[in-house]
Length: 110
Length: 116
Image (cartoon, rainbow over all chains, first blue to last red; front, side, top):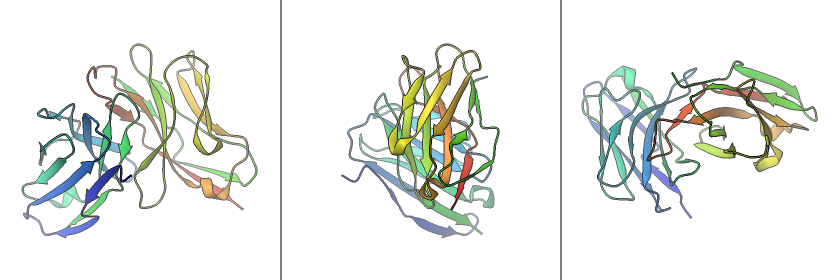
């Protein structure tokens, strides 16, 4: 039972490069979420998807785009990476209950 | 605005002693409250939740939390701390404006350090 799987686990980018973070869940959940975690700031919601075919902005969407490819997969794209986007990114899913989290992608932008 | 506050960045406790990690909230309507734990290099793991009913909620790993409506608090507790409880703890409240998802508003986290 994998739960929520995120790839890659680590990535280093140069400023201006693009990258897509992948997330897949096997729990048949309708809702999926992307967060970033920075020291002292807790988790901040970037984008979320209430169901397949819908996406909405969260608290910090600037510089990011998302795609809800199907019910299982929700990807996060950085079109032109900036050093301020250095962070740990978490994907989560839920179905009218507690959110279930992946183990994160650690992204460094030089 | 809806918010969650965790007033302590770090809590230190000796193994075997009781522990408390504090959380207060500010939301409209009845709150749905959660506690999560994060171990190093891992995602958040659900510990317990309060939706309605008994103000004392029991969860995983021997943790419990007490809901206090008058003080708008939801403190996490454990009668006897273990070194293995050392981790980062997050309090969260369901966004009351989120009608079709389980959007959460998180606190900034409290690092619990249990000393042998």
